[in-house]
Length: 191
Image 1 (cartoon, helix red, strand yellow):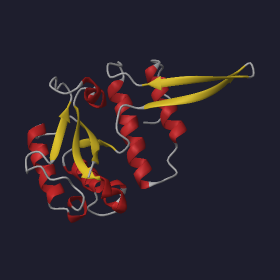
Image 2: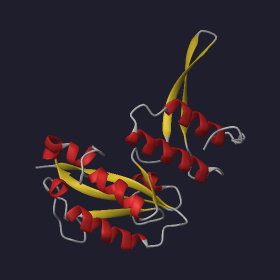
Image 3: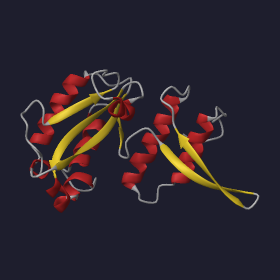
């Protein structure tokens, strides 16, 4: 039976005390104690069934590094059987207590981490009409953007608000991110 990987994304803050290795060990204990998550988890061994992908890990493939290209970001990854989708709420639903993403969100709060429910970096495509013609604009936040910390804060807050309220305004968040990407002043924008 084949399967797939599921990951959750985090960024360290100034208040994060523990090392990534210590955080991994604690997250592993939480996952291994969740019957919901364990029901479809591919078991390799205690050390490898929950893995970490860290910024700057040069031993990983280039495509893997793209998801943690921003300084201080990392992901916890698990492999699950295809059957995981039969119980998708146990992995994808923040409202389901002890689901994979519920554990990740609580873990981030407990350890002063930014949690990104939609992963990172932010990327989107917008359609624009110029002189009656459709044009497509591709926006991709660069990890070395001079405002990356502020962009991360907006992206993080948008994701957390989306968990709490399905009506979170994506247009407002992407406008703020674009303002930062193009180095405009955010003095008038609420953060």
